[in-house]
Figure (tube, rainbow, N blue to C red):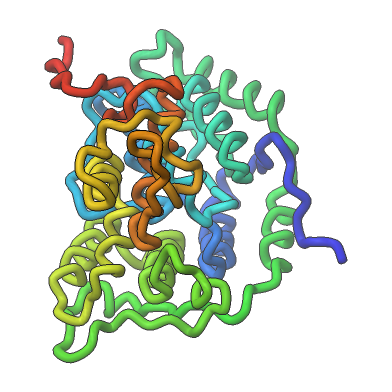
Length: 345
């Protein structure tokens, strides 16, 4: 049996005339919002001339990692945080419109993330779009030519109608988590049980490292973000409200914490609650799936609900280039016990 789409190592792009752009994006969003493993990225204009940190935050929002903490971009000139969540998350298709807003080196970073996380990139390029190219030393025309050259060299090109037909023909997974209306995201939470339901996904029901209703809540959030029915800030606020709900369990809180932007705190909490002093263990002492940690030569099991947070912390340290003998008590380019310096002017 053949699948609806054969993954390719490079992006799949469509060069869209300006007259077709609005209709294509509207219809494509509708089709993409039917699937839990799909996210839509709309790059924000980079007023501060910092494309990578801005892209990192936009990508976190797109894949539903709105989390419980304030977004952090200072000092992160990389995409390691969203890459960690892509590796451990269900997103396997990432659609990006207004590609011309990104410089080519940002597209290179995004392409590398997709290759590592085994995520298919779908690029929608407006052929008439020539946004400002501030900070690149290029004119608008040169910037647009650079983007077109990058897309042509790396991507498989589809016509707009062919791209839309491909997504319209994609079979929808069943059963599916409950889809929330636009009103649900903005209305106050009603009294009673927490309104987080799952339509009994067999996979999530048998998953001992997560809670089915939080898995479905995050899936519904991605679909809402893809469809454009909720803003990321609103989704973040709803998650905060749910963490304070009396019906939310400890396992639910762990699942929400693991899905947040803060990779360090939940991972260290999982270590210290497993064994005192275990936050000083080396990277090699933590199993890749975070099922066990080795403390003084003894393997100690990690509770199922703590594993996702710990696995993400381990992955973030690996992506940052930490050696197996180095401590896991760190995040990205920061060393353990070293306070981050102020942003250089």
